[in-house]
Image (cartoon, rainbow, N blue to C red):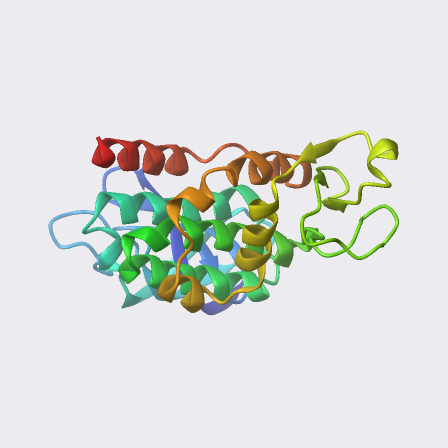
Length: 258
């Protein structure tokens, strides 16, 4: 048994018996880890808010590779991300980040760039203008999928390698990228995509989150994006399902508009 120390994001918290919790943490060192935290519930909870959703915390736990549930020894809160809890819409998109990670992470593994992206996304969602919430979240999804090895090809035809025109017409879900007009007949799962959506996909994939926060796309430009992204995620992420948090966010947005 080894003692592990790592910074981590708290992704999921499940009450266990009277005083304990089972916590899923996305650690900077070992990826997703399931932890049993004993004696942390009650009037004066042990570790305070370090084991709440969205919390960024320093964790110490006992790691044994032969078991799925590790034992938490200590936790210290670094950043609670309280801005996500003060507004229901920000909470929904922050929850979308956690839910997405729970679907794509496969237990202990080197997190790589995805961990830093996840932490940064929650920071931006806390305080960005309301009109930037959707682009920042969708940019997170696109960048995350890319870090997981499924970066969509938006600049060359995935069939022949020809450089894409400014307004390519088709996107292959299985091949994961643009299909030129000459190759459309030989690729059988081509989804038609409008020219503005191509530009938006490229911008979300390549722009820093701070750029999208400062100069977000207009809401009208984001409208058709899910029609491309959701089938693409289904095709390439084994356990992907529509995010409940995203449906909640869309319902809250519609309610506020009405």
